[in-house]
Length: 260
Image (tube, rainbow, N blue to C red; front, top):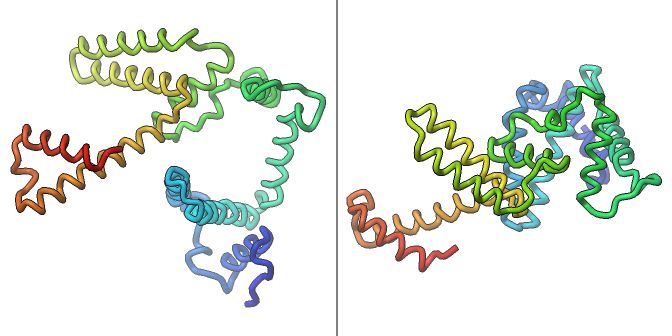
């Protein structure tokens, strides 16, 4: 089986995937379906996020390649089923980009990024019809915190937003009070959800990505806790045998060394 030439061209990847799915191709690739690839596709998306957060350009290049593999493989499966091919995917997104950027490809006007976003939603409503909700296209499978931030971003574009940050901070204080006063697990869970939703709103208004902030907090905690375990091994003691006060003292000590 001869390999495609010009490996840096998109068509080479399309040909390779077709070969892998062919009669003499790879047993694993041939058995894949749209649904069987779902979990690994999501995993690749998260690995792209890790590469983005790390700032490692080489890692990002590799992870984008893995993600592109999934996209082309899904298109190949669809082509074999007579659904669509990769050309239709490329054409569809190209036409959508041209249509939704009239300020670039037509006679539209957009003075800033906010107006571009509002125009985008207006054009989307025109495509979908009067029954379309601006929240319909937010995937329900998104992580809950990301979903909260995205739906709040969408409604803010049509004016459903606080006038200033102080209003949201006051709302946060209200949600904390309601959580403290809540009785029973079900009620406390509801109030805690409202508290998280308000925190997502604060992050959005501050132009912070909540998932990124929480992932970084998780990594920071991991580094510090792993350092505490290392110190305990060096001292010949078990972390679990330390008292709570001793654990906290060690945490403060490690914070000065590990930092952010």
